[in-house]
Length: 455
Image (tube, rainbow, N blue to C red; front, side, top):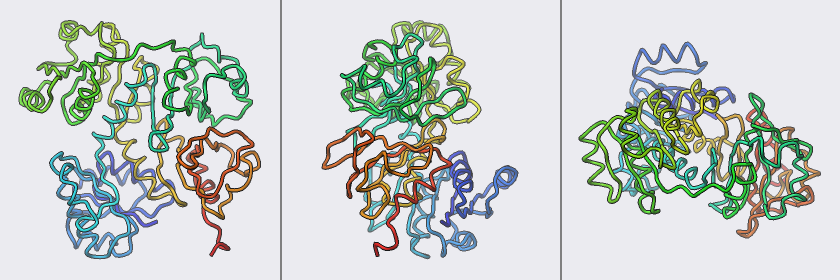
């Protein structure tokens, strides 16, 4: 697939890096010469110097032969113009743009088919806020994702040494815990990523991801040894930027007690005008005395979402030391993400990785509904529709020739979600959720494709 990526910032660079490793034909457009030099030293992609809103630059990048344009510069206007030019010059099949301004996002008509005709709008800050809210809603979880239009949840939790699961095989679950319907989709053990079989044995400190029905999510967390977690109600958000605002607004509606700590007084005024029940405090989230004054010890969750990753880490660690029950930090740098669990932060959320996940559904072959990535992209969860002549239909799951390191986690049929076993048969038209290592994605794509003889 020929892909043009406009903007070599954090999001654009991450997309280019992932796609180039998969063998996609990538051209990156960037106007800053310093950034171009940095990218050349680490990525093997074609780079065009210039503005992505320039027709001449787009033609130089090969817009007339491209399959997809992804515009992710810091300017909403440049991103929209780039996609508009791409459509008028060559009718590019897929167009994706990063749009952050709430005014544009509220006026959605400009993105419709009769206008910009965008296939996907990326707003990393809003995606991150939605991800954080899902995690907050399941106390004790380190990650939460929705599948099958909200009818299925993937819950991640670290296995406590006192959990009854330690030393047990996955096959033992059904007999031991008849009140919990779940399928273990993946396990992270140190640097090892495991897509488990029935013989896989749980160990203390495993990071376990399990699929379950929404009303069973808290029970699954308790089973992992976290105990019956008390529902979260009191939350302090450090950072009143876009992520903080996008998080506080729905939390108000859901009945949470929310405080926002923000340094910039002008931004504090903006937040106070836009939010009804949130308490807005002008101050520094790394100030120990301020956190104490705001009763950090009585806080269920502190969320650090400033634009400074180091400050987010420091604030989270300080909050935990002062008695906060849970700390969530916004972190994008891979070197920081890899050390989160070892330094005492409960959860890290990466806007960059969340945005890449949304784009993957347009690259994967087969009738793909959605793609999400787990643990820094080491595993992909592919939600797809089973096609009539693909290799996954009309046979029991245990007889399917799935690539090693792949697991079928769930099936939806006529809006009813099933957690399958080896005897379950996938029918044509079923919605299927597959977990696979990133290195085996091409093999999974192959079995999802319609066979040539179908035509």
